[in-house]
Amino acid sequence: MSDQIARTEKQLGAILRRVRKQARLSQGALGEQIHLRQGTISRLEAGEPAVQLRTLMEALSALNLEIVVRPRSQGDASDIEKLF
Image (cartoon, rainbow, N blue to C red):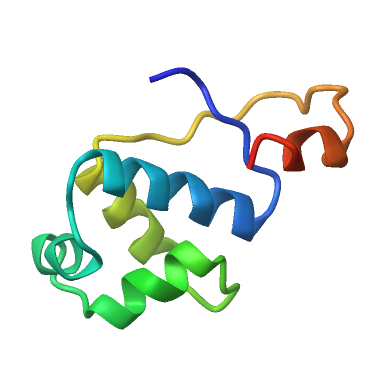
């Protein structure tokens, strides 16, 4: 999988949804792996801002993903939106 850029909660949620589906996991199955309800996974994938950081980190770990922090690229936000 190539690097993916997310600058908003919704973009990050879309990445998580795509990776979960590629792993052939339902929201419920992912939730069971990390001891969360399906609704919590749904809110995370929808980019709802009230999701706790710990929830995000657990979902990333379950999907074998990590966060990389780097200087922001010069691409316009609308350019990144086109990826989704």
